[in-house]
Amino acid sequence: MRPPHPPPLDSRFRGNDVTGASVTQYYGYTPLRGNDEPGTSVPDRVKDAAIIMDVLRGSTTRLAEAGCATSRLDAELLLMEVLGWSREDLYRSHEGTLDAFEAKRFEALVTRRERGEPIAYLIGRREFWSLDFIVSADVLIPRPETEHLVEAVVDFLASRPGSQRILDLGTGSGAIAVCVAKECPRAEVWATDISAAALAVARNNARRHGVDHRIRWLQGDLFTPLRGSAECFDALVSNPPYIPSREIAWLPGDVSEWEPALALDGGTDGMDFYPRIVRDGTPRLREGGLLALEVGGDLAGRVSELYRAHGELRRVRVLQDYAGLPRVVAGEKRP
Ligand SMILES: C[S@@+](CC[C@H](N)C(=O)[O-])C[C@H]1O[C@@H](n2cnc3c(N)ncnc32)[C@H](O)[C@@H]1O
Image (tube, rainbow, N blue to C red; front, side, top):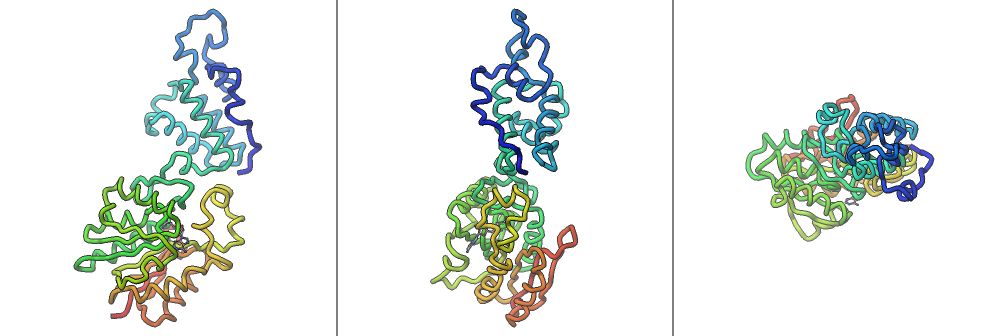
């Protein structure tokens, strides 16, 4: 989305006390009766109000004009956020109103969305594996495709007896680490990221989901924080950055311009991380342990080749996502 930049919020409201009249003009919906009729005695709440249905219509149009493909949905999500409502509430109360404060907050969010900022950053969360994850601009917004990676690990661990130790490299929001910890009560998870800011978000998510005490957080480049430790793992999982550097600019603007390059950039051909993870990760696996890596684009073949060439990995397989695209390369360490 590359919309014409609207003037800053403050100047739009300059000279107004954010009454219904100014808010109304702003959104382009029909004012309530009496809004600008001097001398009418309409109660403030009504006078200053904006009808939800009209707000929804106006903001959907604006977002569509800004190039937003999911304009109606986005407008609804932002409105639900401002009102603290569910979608059912929204549909049930179409005739309800926003007060001036709510309208101002909604306007600020719509303006940011017009400029391309992802909805997940605007509302500060994204659902993953049916759990609510806090997200900020410091972390990749977790994608549904990554649930296949979680599923591969959870299924594998279900059939592995005893205590279990899992390593999640590049944990970001903590989506994988937290879900594995929640699904596998015997698991102790180690989660790394090179970004301290991402680790803070991940840790917050682990606390919210009651698994922080079962996750060890380590900051640094891939296996570097494990240096000096002989720790081995039942499963090593990672969704590393895998977008070829020059292709980042071709991604939709709400990805390329807003999500952290650190989480996207996989180097010249997207393959920067895989050889290192296979080489340094396999010795960190216990016998029969799982190495499961998310892949994008057309990297599955090359990553599978790395697994096979290593010699210590067997049962190398590629798992597809719901779209039928190769999404996870998995293999197990030979006994
Ligand atoms: C594609 S994101 C995955 C985030 C999360 N695991 C998920 O699936 O949603 C990759 C993550 O790797 C981290 N990262 C990038 N380079 C790294 C490195 N050299 N060592 C460790 N983590 C790194 C990024 O900060 C980012 O959080």
